[in-house]
Image 1 (tube, rainbow, N blue to C red):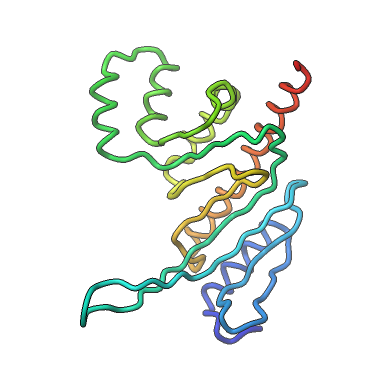
Image 2 (cartoon, one colour):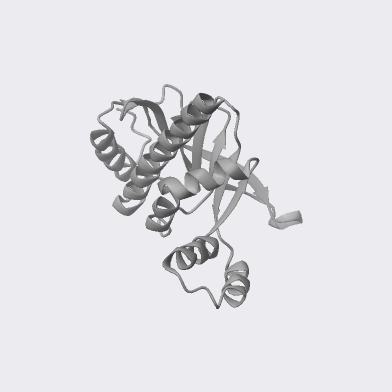
Length: 202
């Protein structure tokens, strides 16, 4: 066991490893200061790992090095058509404008759409692809996790990536990373279902 890892990090990573049913991989060098977990979960290759990024802040005599912790979730996805997709938490300013613009939404479907726009910013390179995902369950997933998704979730080539500026050292943080891991896998399944159907049509 590496002594430079703080006990709360080890405790939460052990609980995360139990949740995922995977072993913890411990760092072998001093500069890697957090464990990682990698392997098959829900029939899909995943990796959850934490790391630190240092940067210089301030000017002149007030310059200093600031180090922030990050945790990433990588989930494999068969993205045959190289679709691009990113989901980021919405900005408060945009929420106000959207609420004013959509005051007259009445149906439940329109209300869900407004709530989705209020909480998320979506970017994609194929509107048919994005609409199909949203209409086949992804909208409901996003609305369910609107308090848990704190950073950008994106599709990069054959990997779904979620990276948050956080260290897994508390139970609520670990549970949020667990949620994001499951959400990433659910998204991967939807993407592959869409791709399979699209290839069948072609």
